Amino acid sequence: MGSSSRRSLTRAAISLTAAVLLVCPAAVETESHHGGGWVGTWTASPQPASSPLPINGQTLRQIVHTSIGGDSVRIRLSNAYGGEDVVVGAARVALSAGGAAIVEGTNRVLRFSGSPTITISAGTFVVSDPVRLRMPALGDLAVSIYLPGNVAATTRHDAGLQTNYLSAPGDFTGTADFAGTTTRSFHFLTTVEVWAPERAAAIVTLGESVTNGFGSTPDTNQRWTNLLAERLQSHPRTSGMAVLNAGIGGNRILHDIVGPSGLSRLDRDALVQSGATHLIVSPGSTDILLPDLLGLPAQNVGADQIIQGHQQIITRARAMGLRVYGATLPPVDGFPFPGFWTAPMEEKRQLVNRFIRTRGAYDAVIDFDAVLRDPAQPTRLRPDYDSGDHVHPNDLGHRALADAIDLKLFRPDND
View 1 (cartoon, helix red, strand yellow):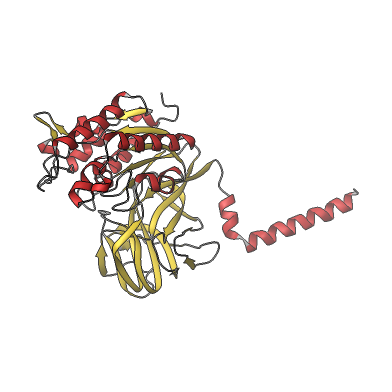
View 2 (tube, helix red, strand yellow):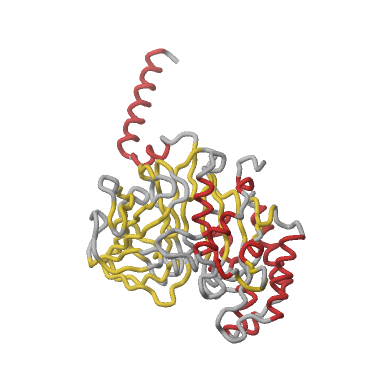
């Protein structure tokens, strides 16, 4: 090929590249990252709403507390339990200034495949394009979503322990602050991801109400998962580890009840989370106690079935390359319902805990039972860790759970 031909081809390539840069800025932004990857920094597992929140052309502003930080952000919105399509008219992310207010100069417009709007088909989810926003670790992000139609928010995460905001009718995604009604559930929003350094990764915690944070003080991020994230951030060798809370209150391993079972939601909520490398498994108590409490005798399972459920989770997680840690079932005796906890139930709990502690099925054991039980009455919570219902730990109990976890389990080289 002659030099003039090569020069012509070079000019053509430069012109084509320039055209691509003008037409596809979002794609260029994504490709401009080097030496890192997308890692989840926050999640809330979706579940069907028994009483859907009605949204009539209003804006939701939801507050997310991150675990790790990054220099770009994207979100996931789910219509998993919707019976019809949901139109998103606008969406933005900004640093939270407290309440419904956002930090001036940080509000970023989100796009979806280049468009500021998107329709989420029933039963599906969407991922936004990334936007540049320096998101700190352990910070608060405000995610604003304008829904122009009349929508029943059938996909939500209950008992989120975080005050979120619903505006008057209108698009308030670009507004610095607004007054409106509040909710402590998350609606449609299920995941926030950040572009993080190459060695960053995520720990997913699969569990029920204790993992979800029940018993801790709302709006203070005192769940044991938040406190674990704080501890990880305080050590250079673990500061790249995110914590993704995939707990659902009342969740069971084997049967649906409050949301889908642990086995049925394992892939969606845990194994395919961006950057996931570790899984902490803590459900099982609700498999024991809910059938009798709710009058579901056909779902009354033995310890061997619960153990099989744990083994299935371990097998599936390892197939995806995750390290899997088992948390023992904490004591729940004393909840103020007649017959709530019986001697046969306690025997099942002990058998499951013996499997977790002694069979070597998990890569490591996190002994929540040993942390929370009352030495004087081992089937009950320690009084100083009791939120008041004798089942869920208070802030001090959640702190004890976080402090009991060996951070060496999450070092990149696991030494």
